[in-house]
Every structure is written in C-alpha cells, then in structure tokens.
Image (cartoon, rainbow, N blue to C red; front, side, top):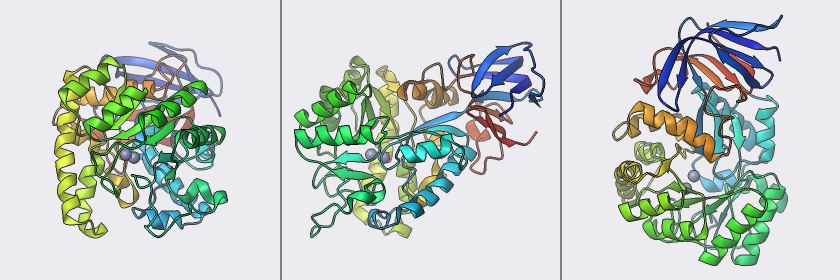
Amino acid sequence: MSDIVITNATLLDPRDATLRSGQQIRIEGQKIVEVAGSVGVAQGATRIDAGGRVVMPGLIDAHVHAMAYVNNQVTLANTAPYLVAAHASKILADYLRRGFTTVRDSGGADAALADATRLNLFPGPRLFVPGLALAVTGGLGDFRVRTEHDQGCPHCRSTRNISRVVDGVDAVRRAVREEIAAGAHQIKLMAGGGNSGKSSIYSPHFSLEEQRVAVQEAADFGTYVMAHCYGVDVIRRALQAGVRTIEHANLIDEDTARLVADKNAYVVPTLSTFEASIFYADQLGTPAHIVEQVKMMLRRGVEAVKICRDAGVKLGFGTDLEGVMHHYQLHEFKIRSAVETPAQTLHSATIVNAEIVRHEGKLGELIPGAFADILIVDGNPLEDIGVFQEDGSGIRVTIKDGYLHKREI
Ligand code: ZN
Ligand code: ZN
C-alpha cells in the first residue's frame, strides 16, 4: 500500500459543520498523518488532486445486518454458510459504494466476515460485529416454528440465523462469553418484541437480571450491550440494566428520552427499514395489520428523533435493512431531514457513530492519527445530502483503511 497525498481539498469537519478550502492530507499506511495547507510528499506517493471538491470522512452505519441477504428468516437459516458469506460480500460492497466505510452489525455478522473486509478479500466497510444476537424463547429473534424445538447444527451456528435463543441468567452469561470468545465486538440483546416476531412490539424480553448479567459480562470483557427496543417499558428496563445503545426507540416519550440522556446512553434510530417495509409489503406478503403497525412505527420514529434531540440524547445513525431492502440505506438521510438539518444527520453518521463503536478520534473525522476512511464527493453534503446516490455516482474517490477502493478523478 503506497502513501497517498490529497491536494486541493475542501475539508469537511462534521464536528462543527465547517468547510476549509485549500487543504492537503497525507496518508501513511492505514492512517492520516498530516492535515495542513501544505504537507510533505514522500517519493512514490499516490497523488490525488481533489480539484477543490469536498473531502470528508467516510460514513458510518451503526445498525446493519450484513448477513441478512434475504427477508425470510427460515430461508436464511437453511442457506449454506459459504453461500451466506458470498451474498454478504455483495451487500458489504454495496455499503461501501454508497459511502459507508464503517458499519456496526446488529445480529448475524461474525468476526470472520470482519476479517475478510479488513484483509480486502472483497471490498467492504470495516465491521464491528456482535456475532449472533441473543433472544429469549418465543421472543423477537426466536425464528423457530411452533413445532420445532432444537436450534440446529452447532457447527453451522454462525449462519443459523441472525440470533440465538437463550433463557436464564446462567445461559445468558455463557452466551455472552461464547460470542465474545468467537470475536464479537459488542453484544446484542433482542430486548423487546418486533414487527417480525411472535411477541408484541411493546413486550420487554429478558428479565432485568438476565439483562444485567449480559451488561456485566460484556463490561468484564471490555465491551458493551446494544439492545433492540421499541416501547417505553422495553427502553426503561434496558436502561436500568445498563445497556449502552438503545436501538430504534421509535415509541420513546419525553420522560424516557430524558432518562436516556441522564444515563449517558445512545439512541440509534433506524427509519429506512420501516419505509422499505411499507414499499415491499406486497412483494413480501406482509399482513395488512403489520403494514399498519409499521406505518405507525415510521411516523413515531421520526417524532422520536425530535424528542431525543430536544432531550439532549446522543443520536447515532442506523438503517436496519435486510434482503431486498438494503438499497434503501441512504433514504435514512432523507427521512431524518423532516426533523434535522443535513449537518445534524451527518454529525450522527460520523462523530456520534464513531463514539458508539468506541473509535472517537479514529473514525468519523479527518485528523492526524485517524484511520484513512475518506470520501471525495461532488457538491456539499452539509447543504444537500443528495450528493449520496444509491449508485455511488456522487462519490469520486473512496479510501478505506488507507486503501484506494475507487478513484474517478
Ligand atoms: Zn431490532
Ligand atoms: Zn436490527
């Protein structure tokens, strides 16, 4: 990997939503080493003249399911592991094409997939993975049919599905240890019901004791818990247990949002999945009452972003797409624009998400010491997030981890 120098750059700083023209960036290996009006250029370095274009940090999506190549959980569970990985490689390449140089998986992706993109075996973002999400019997993430009791072949567990079923404090403790031993970066709990599950969207899953032991075990191993939560009771129990990132939070109210802020926890809204679910309802055969519920969840989810901002909650950026819906990823910006400025949403997708994956100063901004995850784009995303197109045409250069993935300048 040769060193890279970018010249004639208009540097976008998402921290304070500013642009600085006439900048140069020097990259050595994986890292940015210098950002200034003029930087030294080593012999043999690759030179990229940005032509005055905006140069910005790569986007981060803090809630994806890279292994979910299909919307049907039973089909996913019965697909051979190599085929799942092959599908995932395409999904990951698409994330990168849309400008996402980092993603945090929320169930399904394991350390092997993270290694594959780190080693550039196929193009894709850097991955923070939970392995399998933990779910309770009968709850969201228990995709067994009523007559099925076992959980499948243990050797195929990594692609059995996006989740595994565990009940009881000891079983949760062991499952957390197993996922971490298998390389999980964070632990995911299905802490409440979902649209696709057998339980109500308002039902909390896992007892307080089960959640507490997950949080404690994760902390003992130096990591944290992210939890699927829609309703207020679900969010409150997760907060009480010490969960660090509340996923979705569509049904949050003002009091609960203040509690999230007091606990210094994060909310990661994922709105595009609801919009995509409505669009694909017919094709996927979604029952009418679920479609109505999803419409309500989208409306409440947009309101939730405003409620959280007003309460001072740290808001991340996620999408939560599966199967045919993955191409809706950039719609998240459009949906959030109803209640946020482009600069606010960009701040979530860079600075806040870098904190969420615990890489503040290393990801989400272009400063010396940070990983070289860089986009050169046409237009100014602080004013018009429309520069990000599904086909990636607005992105002229993509660098991830110091590796030049795309160069169209
Ligand atoms: Zn979820
Ligand atoms: Zn999810």
